[in-house]
Image (cartoon, rainbow, N blue to C red; front, side, top):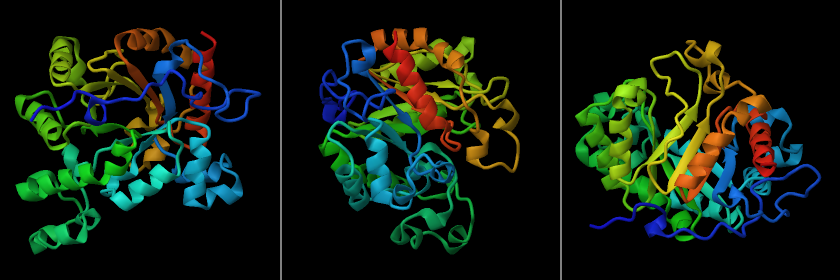
Length: 337
């Protein structure tokens, strides 16, 4: 079956006349027309709009913070892009996708982090839909962490199918951005693991898939060309990252483009907390970028713009209001170029 390399069935709406992705100082939300600098190809947002530390930060007005529908509307007035990370922990469903569709403007884009099992991560069987969970052997159902290798192939295939089908409302409306395939630290560069990525490509047809590695072997100099060629040959977006360096999981900040869509995810630079045991995900990403640190990315973003059709810049330093503030900072820096 022939598959498009990007976009819902390969189609993307024009971005040139869409409103600015977030507010600028002195401007009401989403009223400034996007100018003809490269911003027409750049969407900026964060990797969550529901993180508990964000809700507690005061960024949302009190009345808004307590209501799921108003939170997303408030966020979408200020940003044109968000990454949905809840889909990593539980399979989304069409009813919820329809609500996300209804609560956002026509030009809004939502990326999704693939469900854990899709990217070889373990999951609690309780997070699986009840009908799937009940088909598993009793001993598997009782485990706290079940890896894909412990699950029957037909269950794995069904998980992919349900994930894909759930996003149909957003796909039809042109609001589905990319599906993030973020692989674990132990996922090294091997033929078997390349086949695992291609299996996801086959089971999630037509959608734009973006691959983020968390094992440095993929992007070491001796393997870099091989890795990028593999992604390019299969229409997969390489996810560039900004993150703490010096760890086995550290990926260097390479501004590579392997598909019409380019993505950068900013994880912060909190090296002290990056691999410290016992911390929450939010504590690992507790970092506020200085503008000078974001400026380091401006020439890289420019090169990525020139090599792509669209770029998503996502702040994943989701602790308090640091991600939303840094997303605004980055937007201002790009506007001043």
